[in-house]
Image (cartoon, rainbow, N blue to C red; front, side, top):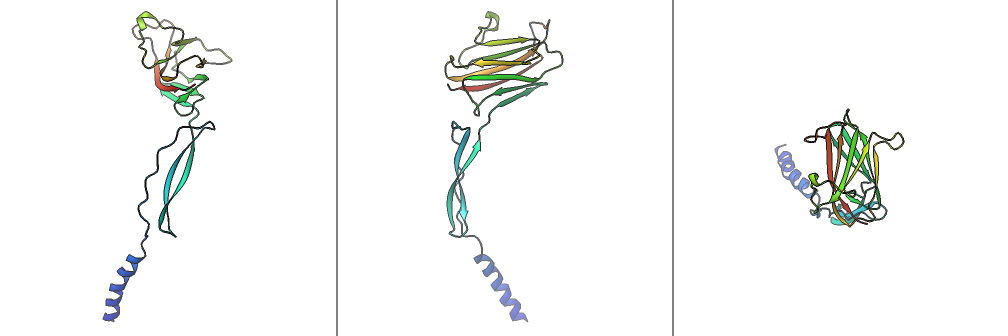
Length: 182
């Protein structure tokens, strides 16, 4: 009996050690491509083929984001259409919810390298205001970007109210950056 136990004690680790996978460690997945015209991005990933014990590559695809959602203090804004952070053509800014006392919304879109001087006023290309939402389109603004230069743009959407003090007129602000690529 002792011999059987000794033989089993020696053979079990040997057998278990031989049955482990012989697959090498595969490379990490590559980075995602830019979004294509169909709204997809792709990357190469790797997995081990258990039969051949070799790493094999395969292509993964993922849908690009078609809108961006910004949220802060009951102000929710959707920017669409997008391809991840890229925008072009006519884009839509839509405030889907607002702080309670909101009577005005300001949509701003301006080039990253162009400073905003609030005391000097803003140009029509930088700010778009909506007073009291239209019953048809609500708190929505369409912006035609086809005449704008490509590049990084700062975007801010601010809610305010009638009679707000100039020193602090905002109930809520959401902001992001977009890449304009016409």
